[in-house]
Amino acid sequence: MIEVKNLKKIFEKEKFLRKEKITVLKGISFKVDREVFGFIGPNGAGKTTTIKIIMDFIKPTSGEVRVFGKNINEVKEKVGFLPERPFIYSSIKGIEYLQFCCDVYGIPYFERKKKISKLLELVDLVGAEEKTISSYSKGMVQRLLFASTLINDPDLLILDEPMSGLDPIGRSIIANVIKDLKSQGKTVFYSSHIIQDVERLSDRVAVIIDGEIKLCDSVSSIVSKYLKGYLITFKENMQLKTEEVKKDHLWMELEKLKSMKCEIVSVEPLRLSLEDIFVKLVKGEGIESSSNSKANS
Amino acid sequence: MKVLPIAKLTAKEVLKEKLFIGVVIVSAIFCVLSYYLSNISAGNNVKIAMDFILSFQFFITAVFAIFMVSGSFHKDLNDKVIYLLYSKPITKVEYLTGKVAGFFSVLTLLSFILFLINTSAILIINKISNLYVPHIILTGRTFIFSLLLTFMGLLLISVVTLFSVSFSSSTLAMLVSFLVFIIGLELSPVKELVTASKLISEVNKIIVKVVTTYFQTFLFLM
Ligand SMILES: Nc1ncnc2c1ncn2[C@@H]1O[C@H](COP(=O)(O)OP(=O)(O)O)[C@@H](O)[C@H]1O
Ligand SMILES: [Mg+2]
Image (cartoon, rainbow over all chains, first blue to last red; front, side, top):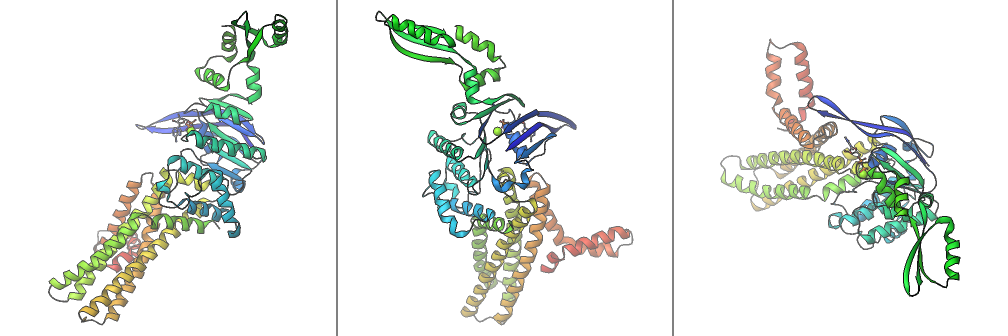
């Protein structure tokens, strides 16, 4: 769906007659198939810049982007986009913006009412559509614009930080819609710095730090790759004890405890969460060594 | 064609701003004021009152046009509404054309409302105290004035659009637009001086002539 090849971006800033060059993207490449793809990185890593280049708002210094194998401008009908920190004219009503979107995509009048009320229900804005946007909260504007990206039934959604600036309820609304889209076989490419959401939602993730992709893999394989073993808690002679075992020795250990007639309280996987891995990457620590040290401690 | 939706959105956005309603209300208030002004002044009362109100409306419309256009582009560019629009199948040409069409329809509506205000003022005054000049002539004058207002608006809108798109700062765009507007008003004596002078080269004379032709509407209106 999206193919990004060796993307570089250098911003030039005029500073007292001399030009200052800021390298924001250092040649990144990744591919998004029919899946939910999380693009994560700390603030200033270059997520928004990448998305702007994918949407052809700004030109890359070098590199290439293909969407559905074509230039994005040829396939915009099939793409929905939500910008970072969404804003729309505050003097109009919510419904008027949605009507505008229907106009742009040429959606026939008899379909509109049903479509709009379905979308409003989806993002929990029923009843707010007749109010002017100036009376909306930030989260409501974000949800309205999110709903408007779905109006043309896009095959690909590009969302820049769809969860930031939302309360937990708003976040779960958007997360549910993304899950829904996934089950419909749509592609969702979204950036975020809220890792818990990404871990729950995404099939694959790419971690971008300082304009470089540090990691690009499926969430399940990332997390299982860093599974180091299990922590078993059991009762022996009325005393709680814990024991760490290696991945392969779990069953052996459990059998042993069973024969000793111990009561097993819990078995926890000793793994790094995506967040742990992310934080370590950001700090520039190697994952392998640090995860070892955690398992041993 | 994506021009029409953008024009509609732009017009809706501008019409609901306080600026538009403010201009209409202030114009109506000035109509009443000018009636009192004509009562206290000596000489051709009606002409003074009309000159006063029309030139006031001329200026307020120009100011409104400049603020409307530069303000709207400022919002689009600074608050990134433009990304929202460009993410849809809308080209830059369609966007700009739609914007200008939207502004122009708002300005046409304003001219029409001003025409209605002026005409009803004339008819009311005619009822209260019989006018010296037949009111049909006065109404005709306000009608032509409204047409000119619309035309001046179109010129101003295109000029400010050009500046708003080419300058990064909206304040700068607004300032330059005001300057161009004032220059347009003051151009007539400059043209006469330039064409009469022997010291000025032919090339410069042609430039001045072209510029004055472009701004003729402003001169015509005064
Ligand atoms: N127009 C610009 N000119 C100069 N630097 C920019 C520009 N846009 C972004 N940057 C810089 O690029 C870096 C990445 O920004 P961005 O892509 O917005 O990060 P993210 O979205 O990951 O938080 C930041 O350090 C920012 O200062
Ligand atoms: Mg960003």
